Image (cartoon, rainbow, N blue to C red; front, top):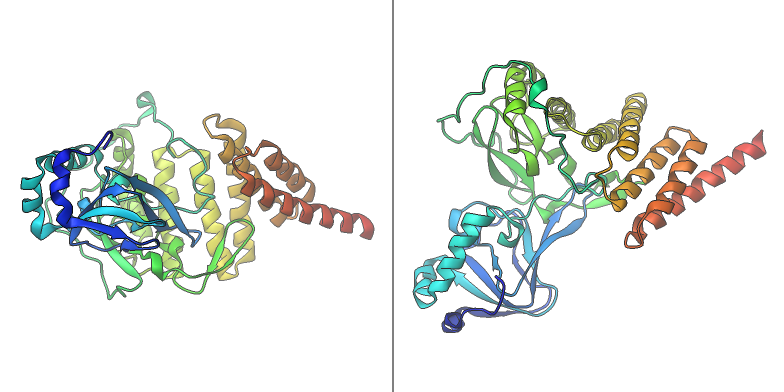
Length: 401
C-alpha cells in the first residue's frame, strides 16, 4: 500500500503487536486465525526449495497485508512468514474482523483491492513454491508461445467438472505435509495434493550439480502436481497456465497419460512414483511446447532419480539429454538473464565432467566464470572450484599418458 497509512488505522491500536527478531507469524501450510498489516519493519516469506534449503521468496513491508488469503478462505499458506528484525504489525483475528473494519473502513477497501488484484501474490503470504537454483534458469515463462497456425485439429476439452473435491488418498503425516487444492485446466477435476512442510526437510549433502541427499523426506518427489483425473502434470506455479491449443493437445493425450500413471495416487509418493511423475511432466511439457530450459531441468531431475536408485547407465543417459538441452538453451535462448546464462554454463560444465569429457567441461566452466555478473559471486566461485577439479584431472591424465 503506497504512501502513508490512513489515519483511521490509528483506531486499531488494540490489535498492535510488536514482534521480536526471529518471530514466526505462521508456518508453511498453516491456516492462521488472523491476518496482519505491517506497520513498521518487514515480514519475510520462506519456503523449502527442491534443493532442500529454506529460501526467502518475497517480503511484505509497511502497509502490506499478510496472511489474509489463508485466514479468510481457509486455504493453507504456501509459505512460512517470519521477521528478522523487530517489526510492528496489526494482528486482527478473523473473529474481530468486522469490528476492525468498522473502525477503519479503508482497511476493508485495502482487502477488496488485495483480493481482486493479487490473487495468490507474495504479499498475501501465498508465495509461489520455490524450486532448486538449477530450475530457476531464466526471467521468462518456461513455455514457448504456440503458433495457432500449427495447431492440429483436436477435440475440445470439457468444461470444468461439476464433481466434488478429490481428497488425498491414504494416511498423511501432518508433521511432514500439508494439503493444498488445485483445479485441473485440462479435465476440470478439483483435487487435493500434498506439499512438503518447511520444517520437515533435512538436507544431508549437496552435490556439485545441485542434487541434494536428505536425512528426511525428499521434496523433489513432490515438486510436480498431477491431476488424478487425467494425469496432467506440471509444476505448481504454472499448473493452470494453459492456452487453448495446449489444452486441446493435452485432452487428446489423456488416455496415454492415464495408462502411464497406473497405480499413481495424489497421496504419498515412492521413488518409483517420483519417476512416473517426472515422465508425465516431461510428456505434458513437451505437448505444451516447453523450451530447452524447462526440458533440461526435468531431464536433470530424472538423472537424479536414477542416481538415487544406483542406476548408473540410466543416469548417464539422462545426463546426456539434460546437458544437450542446457546447451541449446544457452546458445539459442536470448531471453535468459546473465545470471541464468552463467548457471546454465556451469551446469553444462559440471555434467560434462560427470560424463568424463574433461576439455568440454573446462571450456564451459571457464565460460561460466567469464559471463557471471558481479552480483552472482556464488556461481562464479562454484565454477572456479569445479574448474580446479577439471584441471587437476587433466593434469593427472597427461602425467599418466
